[in-house]
Length: 239
Image (cartoon, rainbow, N blue to C red; front, side, top):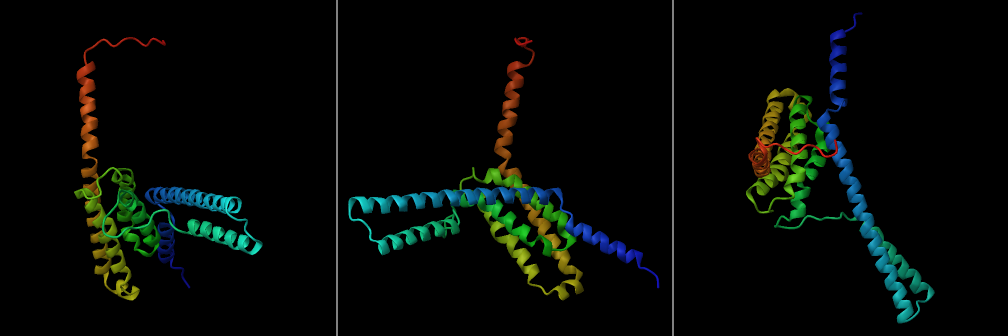
């Protein structure tokens, strides 16, 4: 009985491609770990404030108004602990209704990145390069979106792309039964085409957002060339 070496090779290749993470994914996971650490620190800080305020309130009530009896003191202490536990469990920032705040805009790329990382393993291997492009652009956008006005054109475009178009495309693909995906190659092709469109749109969004900083950088370079070109600069006094 012969061994299907070609089949074994395909399985090994697919296993490696599925489990070896690209540089873009590793960097996205690093950013996610940093966000989780910052969120945990914010929750602990808030819980410490709540616990300190509750303890100070109980102490002030007991000293200035009336001492608390044993059962009342236990109940009050339990309530304070409950407040601390709730403050630890709740996220430090909650989504508002209609208007989009500056904090929500700044957090949008990270939220999209976390969401996409959670679904990456369920998407076809063929679209991994497109996902890497999107992860890279999400990393580029994170430090810049916070500087935009929440109701500016680029901000609304980022909101549509990351908060609507990207999740809607992936969820629509996931809603198709696996058997139907395998039987119809066009399903994967349409997913790839949609992800490519989103990646291209993110490229254009990054160029638009970085246009002003780039112009400022080029202006500064021209100023330095005009100011110092052809001049005899003083020698290094520390030489």
